[in-house]
Amino acid sequence: MRPAVGAPVRRCTACDSWEYGGAPGCPRCAALVDDIVEEAWREFLAGEFGTPAHEDERIIAEMVAQEPDRYDWRVVDAALDRLTCDDCGSRLGRGPVGCAPCDLAHGFRYAAIETDRPGVPPGNEHAIRVNVSVVRRPYGISAPELLGRRMFLPFLLAGALPTTRQAQRMAALAKRGATERDLAALMDAASGETGADGHGSR
Image (cartoon, rainbow, N blue to C red; front, side, top):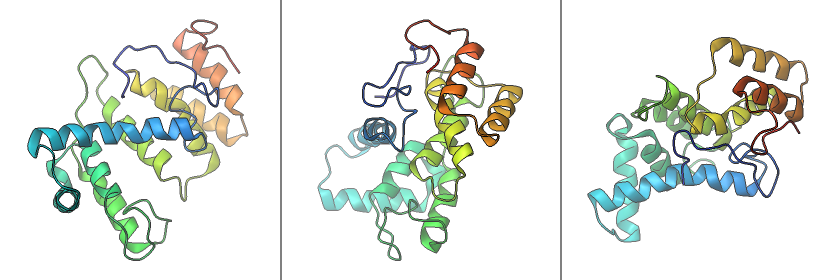
């Protein structure tokens, strides 16, 4: 389940990163990230179609994928997960960079609706959307960028939004070879939570 705005950031019991932030390497964190889109898909189906048959669910997914600008980004991502790329055999939009159908679907997914939750800074939902996309399709993403985005994701989900200066500093440190432990300490200091609630540096 997606964390509520203001919820405390917690450690993953499987990898000791912050929950969600261990993806894609940690199976538990990856499953939590996947459930962000799956939860929205379940709610969408229940609200619009009840309990459709499996074959009907695929038809619904195709409909959503054809008009991504009409649906929430999580619904669009979940719809693409239910479609298979004819070229590479991956979930549509999640295949390797260079697969033409996946690259096209991946680009179109950003046309979907992004609605900020009450109580978050403007742009929080877009930041979540981008970071979830990167974590779920890391092909072609440099290791430093992936590290920075997955480290920010738990805080974004809790309703935070880093300043441009904070994001640039994190990116610069990652490019210079900072480890997850280094960035965790920086995030703790920036959030004012160092040593509290189990969020100390690693």
